[in-house]
Structures are given as structure tokens and as C-alpha cells.
Length: 419
Image (tube, rainbow, N blue to C red; front, side, top):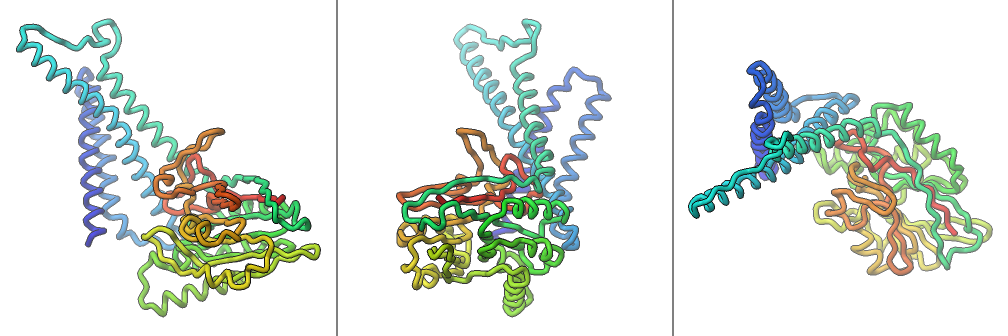
């Protein structure tokens, strides 16, 4: 009931924004011909009404799993159009507020016996401030919509992030040890097997010593891996491939006919890890041995520091016996777990590897500046974080979910060299 109410509130906001934007843009056509005004009105209303109708009906469209990309793309385009209009609306609102203040000031001055009018740019041979702000809103909104469209082509544009991490307690035998971390595959979103294979090629070309996968193999169902098990089974490394479960792997976001059906799906997913020769770690630790020295690898089921996500893991159980390792690496899907429990209770965990956020698949990353809307929800959302002697690395995700693309935050293959 609550979700339904929220849905209708969002729809109402969309319609109000549409009406506001329509009249703001229509003002640009006041000197145009009747034919031009008619074409604009029909075109705008056709697109807007179609978007609202499709959005209402979209949940009832029964797309096969293999063509679910169609649903995601349609939703992404409608969402992009909506956010573009919201951005444009901000410019229009500034203009309306400016004119409102000017109108009130004019009335006050008129009562005082003087007149105040808008010195528009048009009076000096240019365009009025209203027209300028309206066009600025259109350009800004159009630019945002264009970035979302362009981002659809980035979903398989895998980037390699290379980092060197120094630890005083790392055994000398592990100096130069190379780890590749991937996370959030979300195989149910894929539609291009050849492109996914090219990403796997990039991983193998790095010749890693160890490959670690930090959760969310699927969106909801184990069957999503049907066409991709052979792809990810190609991943091999001298010291093995190890994995954990993420929040999507438990099937929490799908309606199941029974608890038994949900559990059967999870058990099948666990068996897929084994089929790919991935060692799935379920609240446990094990040794990684090299040159007569040993470090500890710890893997937990999903543990979240956010109230909206289920916690399945048990770090206390996973840490049993881990005190014997001089250096430890923890795989934990949700980075909020690091603040919730790791840095507060387990100072012996040197490096934590997480994923989960995807960097929201939208943001800006340039030298010296990073921004994504997800940072207002997750304190640690992408890249490296350090507190005292402990480090956390948050992978931006190999796959995608929801929006079938990437804007500014590209899919990531992390190459970590221990020093």
C-alpha cells in the first residue's frame, strides 16, 4: 500500500513538472506562426502523455527474462526525460521567481508614485532575460538527457583501476602479490555475451595471482547465469578464485511461491559458484600460502550497515581462528559494513574489499574531484578509504542494474598490488 502511494505521488510530480515545463517552453513560441505552435504542442504532449502511459503500464508488460533489457531501457529513457525536465524546471522557476519579485516591486513603486519596468535585453537589440533563462533551461535539460542516452553505450566499457597498497605487516613473500577484484556482475542485466567475454579477457590479461568476487552474481534468480556460467568459468588464477554473496543473490527482491522455492534458488546459485570453480566463502576464513608464508582470506555473507538491507552474515563466526594470520583480507559486499563493524571491532582486518554501490552508475570523476548522488547515502561509495591502519576498497561494479548504462562511473576491474 505504501509503495503504491509513493508510486502515485511520483507520477503526480511528473505530470505537474510536465505541465510547468510545457507552458515555460511554449512562451518561446508567442511570436511564431500558428502552425509552429500547433506542431510544438502536439509533439510535446505526444511524448509526455506516452511516457506517463507507458510508465503506468510498464509493470504489467511481461518481458521474457532474456529481453528484460527492453524494459530497463524504456524505463531509463523515461527517467532520463523526467530528470531532464526537472533540471530545466529549475531554470524556469528562477525566472518566474525573478519576475514575481519584480512585479511585486513594481506594484510597491507604483503605489509610491514611480514606475519600475524590466530593462530587457530585447530593448537593446538582444533577448530578454526570461528568454535567455528559458533557453538555458532547455539546453541544460537537453544536455542531461543526452548524457543518459550516451551512457547506454558505456555498460560494457570496462575500465581497469590499478592501485598499490602498502602494509607494514605484509609477509615479504607477498610483496608484489597481484589481486584482481570484480564485483556486482548482475548477469540478469546482460544482453551482449561477446562484450562480457571481452571484459573477462581483460582480467585474464592481467595475469593475477588471485581473483576475488565481492557479490551480486545475479539480479534475483540463479537462472540468469544460464548463458554466462561458461564465460565466468574462464576466470582462473594460480591462488584461486574466491567469491561471496551480495544482497541480490538471496532473491529478496522477487516474489516467490514459497520459502522453499526461494531457498532452492539460493542453493542452485551456490552450486553455480562451484561449477565455475569459484570457492564461495560463507562466514569463514582460509589461508593463502606463498613462499612459506601465509595470509588470511575472510569471506562473509551480506552484512549491511543500512536498515533497508537484510543482514545474513556473521563476521564473528568468520573470524574464528583468524588471529593466526599476520595479514588479513576481508570480502564483504556492502561497504557500510566496514563502518558498522569492521573498523570498530576488528582492527586485525587489514584490507576490506566491497562493491554494492555501483557508484550509482552516474556521476563525475575527474582528477581532484568526484561526485555521485550515491554519496548522500553511502559514506564509502567508490575507490580507496583509509582509517588508521585499515583500508577499504569499493569496486564500482562489473555489471549494471536498473539503468542499462553508465554515465561518468564506468564498470570496473580492480587490479591491486600488495607492497
